[in-house]
Image (cartoon, rainbow over the protein chains, first blue to last red):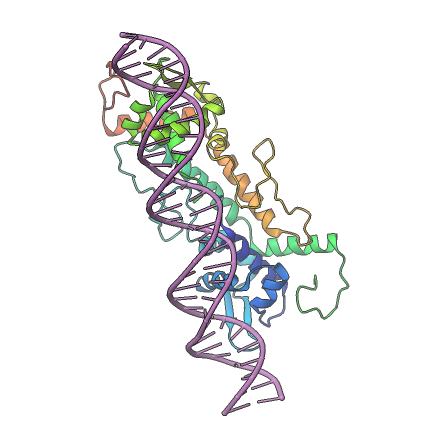
Length: 164
Length: 164
DNA sequence: AGCTTCTCCTACCGCATTGGTAGGATTAAA
DNA sequence: TTTAATCCTACCAATGCGGTAGGAGAAGCT
């Protein structure tokens, strides 16, 4: 498995926030219910997103979370990096640099480490695929599917994602 | 972590076999010693490669393994697929098709699954990176590094990779 | 003030997988 | 018939993952 549920849930959470175009914060409880995810676990996940300045929070009653940046500018490589800690193909890719691109730890082995050459290629493929996907794209995709699958009465006052 | 040590060790094993251009089989013990890997564990890994017809074996004394195909024709996507079982970005990618390209299990969810869209992209990036890397390329890379780092007397009759 | 609704924080826990070991059975060369 | 190798299966410790529990602070509402 490349990613864990932290990435899955975290991205779902961001998409859900992106669908709320309003600037009023959305509570985790609402998201957890609408996505069917455990609230306590989501709390830990959203903390990772906040630490990376991808979401902002307001505490107290009627508080919640909202996106900290324009969805167009949020690329999935930073999102996944914030959630998973690194995008490492192999356990020897532990010494991460600042960027998320990491280097194999046994660079100066006697053995030439042909595998490192391969894993770097794989890592490049993953990061490139993530980098060219923006949050805005995912939000648009999600909205499109919504309309296609279940046409929802627009303009309703639903508590969450009214397909608008 | 994208891959486990099964992929690491398995690829190393194939590269080592590829360096032995002779048609006489190489024992696992020799490879385990030269690569510093546990023999018993390598046995289980090479079984995966054999099941995928990537290596051939001869039993008994002076037996061992050799490549079953031309290294030029062996691409890393089949290798990793044989070793890891699948290249799945997320746990919902379990229903594998014949090809290794797998489909998300909740295709027909009410929720549009924007994440599936993302993970498919990532999976495509990984598979593409693997597919355009051949075993021959890795063998050549390994040999090049060898020469660059420690020039070896060629034509010797050592039992295993004469860099030792 | 006090209650409620949130975010926030930390410790804990069952479970599956991973990486590795042990021990033997089979095959074939010397 | 000994020896060197592949093969096969069961076992095991450690790790990480997904999830739970139980709060402590912050802000709105009455």
